[in-house]
Length: 498
Image 1 (cartoon, rainbow, N blue to C red):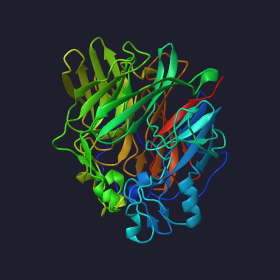
Image 2 (tube, helix red, strand yellow):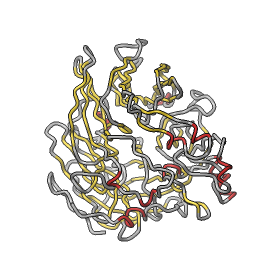
Image 3 (tube, one colour):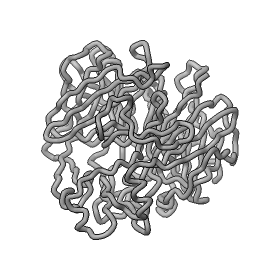
């Protein structure tokens, strides 16, 4: 595709996307590559980029003519892009989960999906089969010597960081019990308390919900070792996909959601399809003190939150007695009903994600909310070195149009102070994934670095790796991938050790 142009501030592309271009990305990954050098389409790869870009997402969406009901039910496939001296080496592997191996051998779906996929064969066979299929498809991180493929409802799968060969389920150095949940959204503390850490959680749901908050070392010989561990019980059913951290707090937003298990037990719906917003409920901020902060061992604080539904948070920070958290709010819980085809969804019928800021007064528990951006967005992040600090800049994937819901086709750099923005727009035929901002380790400027994106080009029916300058979103390079990759989920950057 031709290089999309930067669209500063008001230059948003208003062209209508083509539904077929967007949906054509949903296909099976047909092969696994080992150390394939990526072909440069245009530009040049910055030589200061030295590390590995790992990406996770659904790679198997169809078996013997039967499609998953929702792409989130697709089996996890890990890609690795190793940067060195201006070249990029590509590898990919499916995560060899127990269910993946069984279904590959059988050539059909043997497990129900959380988002509505049914087992192949008679519909009655889905009734009372309450097994969860660990699809390891949501995120991928490196912790110690392990590369972990994460799916938040179960334990992670361990892979070799170089070969991507699956080793098996991981207990994370003995921390997790058998089949214990481990979130797909860890947060990396850049060093608020002398050393960097990884903070993560697991949830046990029911009429009451238990959150287990864990912190791990990420440096030296102790990388992967548990530093702190606490459990807290909260009233009500908790659907928690993400959280945020500050030096003193782990911040969760407990959405006002209720779960009716009957259609799930009867095999009529997937577990996630049995969730719905509770009109009589009230969302809550759950503030759990970090053991490394100023309030160790204290009880959590529960504070009423604004209406809406949140999957992802951007960042949080503290200023005296005020706690600020930036989140992407939806008007309601977005879902796909049992009779819908996810490849034909009407974006106009689904709520868009809007970036909002909540300021929590810790003295009186009052909250003020403001809109940071009215444009539909997802997958927002700050410079990783500013996690838990008051960051000035953020990078996110957005719709190409300024108002209303639509596929993610542009990358936006937003100044969180004055709201000015830069755009890199792939519309009308390009579709972007989560942007990964990589800071320039030799610069003190917050926005010096690069942004990496996997892009689906509807015109050429191909996947590409795009590199942008983080400061102004100027195009640096586009590289051709040797496989087609469906619209994916989360990824991470691991810098080469010097």
